[in-house]
Image (cartoon, rainbow, N blue to C red; front, side, top):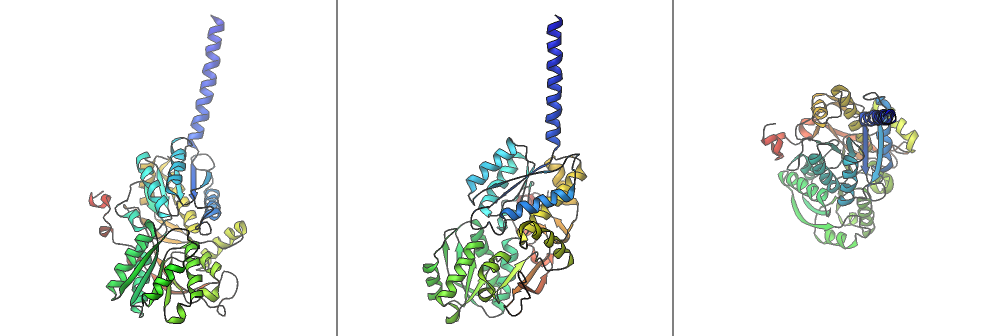
Length: 402
């Protein structure tokens, strides 16, 4: 009997210790960085997004009594791979937040999974459908969207005389939304679409698509793609001599790393829209210098956005005293977003972060003072102009009045 009771006592002690260890593990806030680390968008996010998240976790210190854990994985810009990783993270590995999620198809897939799991997903992807028909109470679109890009460039380029457009569009949700939103605003400004062509993601040879653009008679060849796709299309378009025949390129989603890949000789004069540039002010320069020491180059606005998203999430967890998704999302909406890239931003019920945007022009080689000195400011777009009105996105959360 004593032996049996002793065995029961030992078992109880072991079980109690295991439960305590499990409780401690559950208290540890775990963040998953799910991004493109090997494909066309790896330069704009990739390793830099992981570093940015780690910086935010370090700056936050202990959260709920423990250091924040950051894990990462490569979704390869494939929605099925991204969803499989996200499901394992949410259901088996105790991940509380998944972010980065560059690539709209992956983002939309993971956001739907997060809705079902009642977990939080914050994306840096651009499709305006993310905060429209696909909005979720557990998701946020942190950095920018195709509405802001399309409105700023579709309006300004058309008003400057580019009346006839031809779109070279990457053939998935991001490209479709970007072409749609840009078309809406260029037509409002008095322009027209001469034609468009859909191009597979990660295409290396744009020759046939560029020939169609050249034959269209359009003033503007609009590249509704980004990353390596945009770089390849623009370089090949220059080689084909489209600019010599009176056509101009518009990159509807250009990143700092794209300009680096193109070189200022090729990229000079391009207009672009961004929520962040490393040389914007003292705060952006200071944070970017910290980032550069870790990665060896300046950050893109996706990478800056990952830091901002993780930082705000961790502030909300501290305020809520829990990782419960409903309570944390409530705090994220209540707390103003203030950091080096955001001045009194706000997370709306549809998941869109309301923030200012900026129009930049790429400098000429003669204007640049050194490596990464690529942009000059053209104008600031106040948040109320850059962000789609809440009642125009067809978000069911807005319709329900929640």
